Length: 298
Image (cartoon, rainbow, N blue to C red; front, top):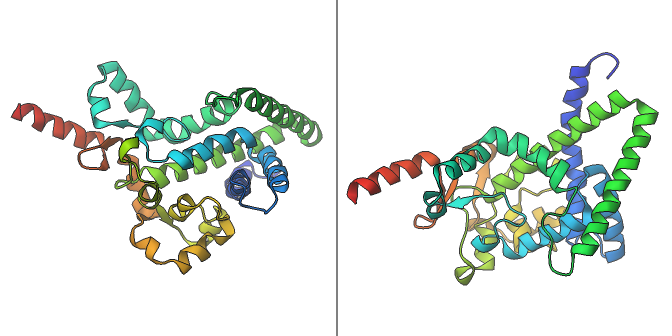
């Protein structure tokens, strides 16, 4: 299509990005050691998928598994999660601090700029590492970067630089936007779950903290059933191809889940702060209305 319509080519890149999401879900399951029975083959397939997704296999899997073990813990929200503040933390910020946070939580920055930074910078160098993992993580990161660079150089030389770079970068960009959107919706819905570690409960964090993103079948398939996120967080050892079966065999789990349709998910963009008193996400408008009321009473 490149030779007769760049517009059609870029539209196809969007479709291609959804198939890349599906490839990434395979990588994601391999990182959980759930896609195949063998650890060796999980790691081999996961690493192969990472060349397509440009998401470093071992580093991302390590961060993501930590997220699964600590999701909903306010102390651990900066690792493997999209940054947010509590009402109290935001109230204590300076004017400039509030300004920076509002810029970050702006939808254009959060869903267009942040994915670019995450894929081009954060995934190229291990900002988030763990004790005893730094050396191995760094080597894994360097190896992944080198293989991607060599692959890009080879494909650029074979297919033509402009054609390859434009199509590849657009595909990766749309993939990044889709990925960020899904992760955001799955954990930043209004009645999600956040507690300090001493009050934290794993089951509640899974069933309430992770949403059931109810999508049309075609998008559920393209995104590897990841919308059934409450089931996935309850047990990350269930592979994506068994999530729906598990949900159907255990319908009681949906009773406690936050079920969100695509239309309803658009409202999640307004969720900016975690209100510990109300136990829900609130908008900046709600925060400032509550602040005016609080000041008038005091």
